[in-house]
Structure formats: structure tokens, C-alpha cells
Image (cartoon, rainbow, N blue to C red):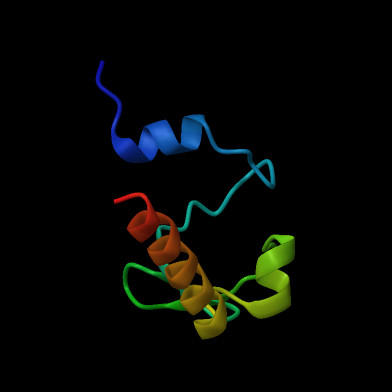
Length: 76
């Protein structure tokens, strides 16, 4: 029996409740999770760093890109 990517994901996911909603989230921005149909959900169970600044905060993204550039360009 071959498992789908979705089944493998749920087999290794730390469940937050006994009956998870099984939402298929495509992306996240600010305090919202966005599913494949574009419906937005407020993220009320985010981790510590997301709670502070939201998903994909522009300053955090820029800092990560800058750090990545510094690391990868110095190793070439």
C-alpha cells in the first residue's frame, strides 16, 4: 500500500486535538492561514515567534534573505 503525501504528513504530525480539522493550508500571512480555496483562518495556535510578528513579516523575511546571502556568497 502506497501512502499519499497527505497521509504521510498526518502520520508524523503532532496532533493538537483528538479530532483535527485537517485543513489544507497553502500559505500564511500575518495572523492568517490561507487554505487552497483562499479561505482565511486566524492562526490561534501559532508558535512563539509567529505570535510576535506574524507569518512572513517583511522585516523578518528581509533579515533571513540577507543572512542567507551573506552565508552563501562567502562560501563560494
